[in-house]
Amino acid sequence: MSTHAPNTQSELTANPTAQLDVLGDECARTILIATSEGPKTAKELTKRTDSSSATVYRRINNLLESDLLSECVRFDSDGSHTTAYEATVEHLQVQIGAEGIDVALANADQH
Image (tube, rainbow, N blue to C red; front, side, top):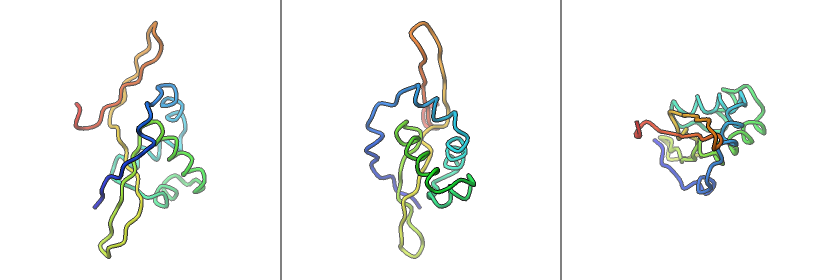
């Protein structure tokens, strides 16, 4: 069971260029894929990505700042809890035009 916690970093307006930069990283993409299946802890993501915990935490922070990931609290059956991360986007649309590059994000509820 998970409960979403406020993510102060998501209050920032995500920069489309930053979002594309984050998605250019294989570890970040693996984290996004894993968290689209449900909330995962940093420890679980470290195992999934086969990366160091420092690398995983950097990618988590990049994804949080880009509004592609959110923090939540996961409660275990014994009453303990831990911070977990969950993808906030299911679809991403990139539009390139005279005005520049625009990235539109949509979650499952928006399509």
